[in-house]
Length: 607
Image (cartoon, rainbow, N blue to C red; front, top):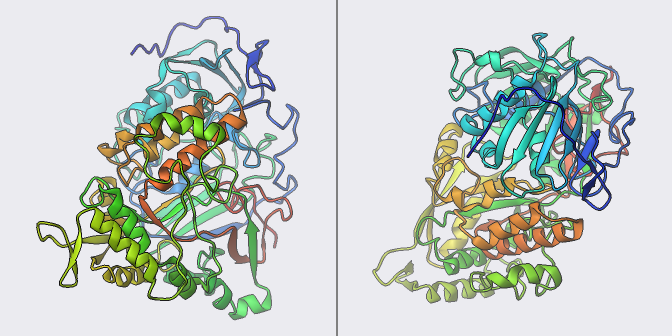
């Protein structure tokens, strides 16, 4: 594959501006780019729609993390890095408007233009953009960042880079990327790549874990820190982008401090004691019963519920289909039937939380009830021989009457295992060779997920005994959990994958067949499905929203009927307890709710 990284400067080539049909004509630089149609905000917009543009600056917020960290290089697979450092210390050429899926606006780049069929894209860097050390962001930094991330960075960066035919400087402040593959999302993906300072890595290996932070251009720089215990991000007083309309009303707080705790319960007690500013509660039962302490009663602590319209994502126990017996869909189906969700939900949340019914449920992207029809059917039919039962005919998760016995689903589970060659012998489910059906469920120590996963797992283990299956809980620390899941060294594990309203190429990292063998992807279940990859291709090359929605719904059917995960519940609202001095723009929360881009991004401190 040919890549020309530092070709001699030449005059700018023609570009193209988005049209309402999703095509491109009359080339000229634009202030933003949308997957379909035009960006909603005009070139002279004042601020993003969900911020307070007049928010006061300064103050401090202390947030909790569970586990630890041992690296300040958030761009590689090695080590445990700090997510907030990646988000607030580094910027990309373009930035997301979280109220507008699939649309980006200029950040480091002042303009963007692309070819008639999105076969190339050009970014022109703002002349005022500079790193935290005062040095300008240059085209050399941009080109080096893309190549280095694409070759030595985390696997999440490599898929898009493999589709770049050439990367070159075409002006003093302009770079062009030409693609070797038809993929209409690629321009947006490249617009979100973090830009690093090339000189930071002179004589220093990029792909090694390090506690020496790279130089970024973001609003915050690393202050005081102690690995595994705390890290402070301090607002850069000379941040170049402070007055940019895109940033107005964002990054208002003067210091973001992260405190690490070994256990979620300890983190909650630290919040109760006033050592932490805000706490996100994922346990509805706890939200209803544990927030009556004096600081709440006095008004020092405020309880805020933040609605959202984002997909449920998938959360539950994932089965590793690289290993027997999980390579048989009938075994996976039986284990889903054995999970008595209604009983578990009643016992742990009072039955108030809705169940995840598919990977994109709770949104227009989720699979619909009943048989596939229309464009969804057209997409799936060519793969009918590969698809599992329910993908075409319709599928829904088994439901029980809520009683502990779960008799109907237990009978179905036993029948399905019998079809797969497993029968109960002396109270134990065994195959024809007499081998028992037994496996480990891998969990992370501490209340890492914000609710008691171990209680869900313990109830599930008891339910599995009803069908003669012996499951053993194995709890490991954060480092071991990451190491084992990166290497897919588990039978079943607790799994969480959030989904956006703009899914695209990242879905290959989640469900692509490369992840069956390549370590460190999010394909924990080991999916290898030509049908799923074809749906991802259809998503990223859709010419309009209707085709895009159909492709995502088709993919949702493939994933859900693949029966890889025993799903639990999700929350259609976010629950944040926080100090009364911490404010956010109420009444105009972005469609994702309390997700990425919310806290501390648009919050401020009001003493």
